[in-house]
Image (tube, rainbow, N blue to C red):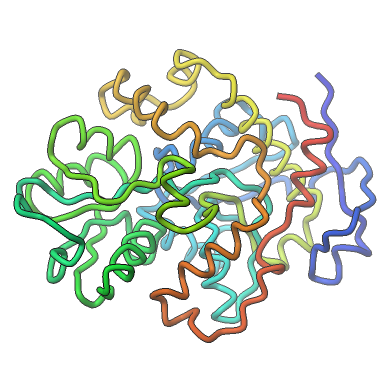
Length: 345
């Protein structure tokens, strides 16, 4: 199998903005072979392409040594990048908008998910008489971490019902067994989390789902359009200084996305770490069927995705309201297009 890593011409990228114009590429090695990636909840299907690229050695094939640090949620991973301990974040696209609102320029360069996969549910035990979202006022809602995509989704659902984040208490519960324990033990009244956590809670009869974004249809119903989810993003300065490295990361992720389109259940089980399965292989595979459609088949950002994300944040987040956000500076498909033209699964 032949692979080629491409570099955008320095003259095009040095200006600080990746344009939509065709770029001239040539073979080149990564400027920074060692890359630190921060992720919030690596075991989640939301970030499965990252795990596939790592476990199937796609990063190594591109000449990269990628060190992945796992945090309790996307907001924590973002902080690692802003603080300088991570070069790249595997996180939610909307964080690039929040960062720009604070004067920090970060850009998405390969999409992992075309739907958020987040499920918002109430505890049947804590809220047996739940009727509407308004009933959540004064309740404790478990999210992976405050400020993460799970709390953003929950905040948006609350806002549509006339509630604000201050009307509830968001509690960080992580993205694994701890989240399940928090719900089952009564520490929280509701939960916004992802698979396989939510399928396990649904199977055990512990929750009642009130909003679901695991399919494209459900996502458009909740957000009114395509809502980009997990992605790789980095500071514009990192991309400017390391276009070959960025391309190599993109190549590996596109290979992972392509592999996931045709992988069998047994191949998936054999690839991910045992700890991802939550002790139940059958449940993991069932969860995979729930979210498979939500993963991007190619890594491309949908044309209306960034605007949907901004509209969602503007509905409830004071950080973004009234701020002049330049969406064109928060994402690019340039690296993915080059990867799609050359990378084989």
